Amino acid sequence: MKNTPFTEKHLALGAKMAEFAGYNMPISYTGINDEHHAVRTNAGIFDVSHMGEFILKGENALDLIQRVTTNDASKLTDGKAQYSCLPNNEGGIVDDLLVYCVETNKVYMLVVNASNIEKDWNWISSHNTKGVEMHNISEKTALLAVQGPNATAMMQQLTDMDLVNLKYYTFVKGKFAGVDNVVISATGYTGAGGVEIYFDNEGDNAEKVWSEIFRVGTPLGLKPIGLAARDTLRLEKGFCLYGNDIDDTTSPLEAGLGWITKFTKDFTARPILEALKAGGLKKKLVGLEMVDKGIPRHGYTIQNAEGKEIGVITSGTQAPSLGKAIGMAYVATEHAAEGSDVFVMIRDKAVKAQVVKIPFA
Image (tube, rainbow, N blue to C red; front, side, top):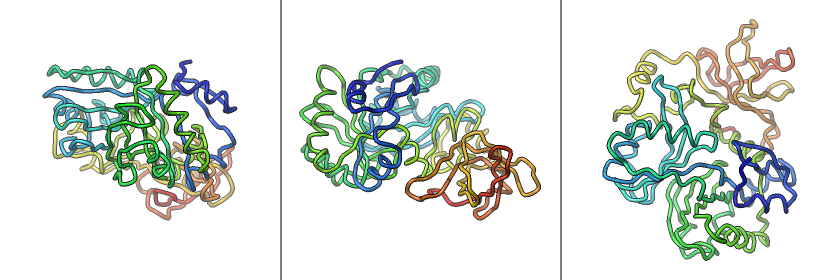
């Protein structure tokens, strides 16, 4: 297993560790519910240094991004970011990612999922037919997410950059916690507000940034948060997790990502996705709330009232903010309407659930 620059910090704090995407990562510290509520009500810090970062440079950088992603990156200007995905040749999803515009038409940073770094690099490289300069900076980039309603105000103490007024999906670059060239973006995977902090992990940068964040944050209740609470937080907001809710076999349209699929430009598998949209979707990703007692888990099948299989759970949990069991699932389109009753098969028992709106909270 690989370590992040903060692995020793997690161990010192007593984190429960486990392998995730090839990295030794903290799963929890004080417990999922405690950590979840800390982020929803105040602030928490996540080590997400396992994520991948690519830099694309040159006069054809935008052209390459436009051809391999579904969203329209031409709308981006300096300091803006967007959520997007990489479609494969069959209309499935190679990965979902963030696109950061560092310099309009010239320099971009792509942030990809940890488990897909090599796969994404190879996929984008295979489409790089116009000499775009590409750099995989994943190994040398540290990434901390400080999330929660009070996160930005806490972090403002460590920089002259205006973080408090940073708009959603924008970013700034400058000095933070005594370290130069730090990118701070108003993005995240919790729906609770806050920032993501990217910096070069050379020298003692990681030690410096971590220590300074806790110096200002601890008196205000900042807590370290593991990946387990990150999962419950993202699920309450209906954010897709690659490998669970989206993968190489699911289309962005089926996954409810039509809003990042722009047919105003040419991109991989555009004709396939246009045909899928025109012909009507056979399945859709929906939110489920359990009516009867039981927790839906990834892979559980879903039936209709007659006992016919109509779908599968992709993510599920007991939602700490709601006190209810929730899940996301692909179901046949005729059962995807809000208010539809379906039955999740839990230990060979049909347990009633209802299709509800996403986000859940």
